[in-house]
Image (cartoon, rainbow, N blue to C red):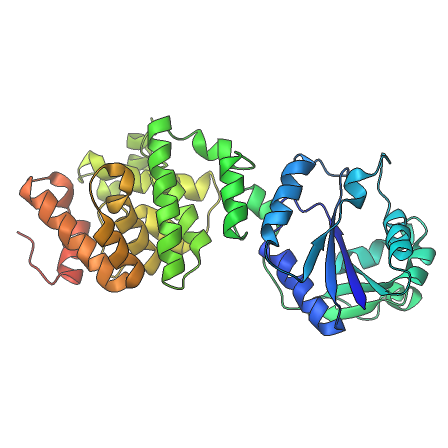
Amino acid sequence: MSLILFGGTFDPIHRGHIQIAKEVKEKVSASKVILIPSKNPRWKTPIDINDRLNMLNLSIKGDDDFLVSRFEIDSDAPVNYSIDTVRYFKNLYKNETLYFLIGFDQVYKLDRWKDIDEISSLVQLIAVSRPSCPTNHPSIKKYNIKVINCREYDISSTDIREFKSLDVNEEVLHYIIDHKLYFYDTVKAFYSDKRFQHVLSVAWLSYDIAKENGLDPTIAFIAGILHDVGKESENQEEVMKLYYKEYLDYPPVVFHQFVGEYIAKNFFKINDERVLEAIKYHTTGNRSMGKYAKIIYAADKIDPTRGYDSKEMIKAMKENLSSGFKMVLNENFKFLSGKKNVLFNNKLSKLCISYYLKEEYE
């Protein structure tokens, strides 16, 4: 039997961690991956270890490839050195082959590791490589490092903490929201309590619709939780005059969608055009909308917290995004037109109706 030791801060654990570990496990034919969260990592100030541990367990729930070790968590040492971890597991698994997984960036720093010679004698070091990594670094030969090329995952825990990505599994995302971690307070600051409940509901509904349609649900969630971020802004008129002059003749009630795009782009540093489009047109709609824009437009209208029975439209959106969107658009058009609502009295909404419902707006 062989085991892979995979330590880290995991603040939080994300899909990249899991996928890389699975790739390495397959390539070396290991039996298990042991995830070892660090309690007091040097040079970092992560969130509470209990939250990180809970998310770690949620991320591998039901996956027999992984185990979680509390060795470093339960240690009384003020600093956890890798040599202590390696010695512990070597003593625990005397007859097994142990691999110690590191990122390639650590290859350059191994000469500074405590007792690195002993580490390399007790375990087989594995460095995860990328096409840009050098293959002839002196440490590779010196410490007998096995270099393994893995698929490149453009994910980092920093991006998740800063709300640039949410590439974690669904249960971990629920944990982050339910326990108000990382970006939660920053996003919440843009909303009143009542509106925040609406955007959270829209975000989770969007997540489910995207997942059922084979799309990335985390992109839909980001767009959903930010879709009304400009709604309560005190600077709507100023932003409109500076950056959205072409829409100044639109009904003021739709200004928030443009201001929302501005805030998402400039405050949250969102550069995913799918998210930005979804926010920008979630009230008026537009012609030839992308899939995520359709999801947010519809989810905003059929959000269960709005107080009417939208089960059939939610079901239609989950079953088929294209036909479900047309159904929601048609119902919304009929409802608002009957009330002579100003929301459809603008060019974008007219383009949306004529494009998707093939009707002439009058």
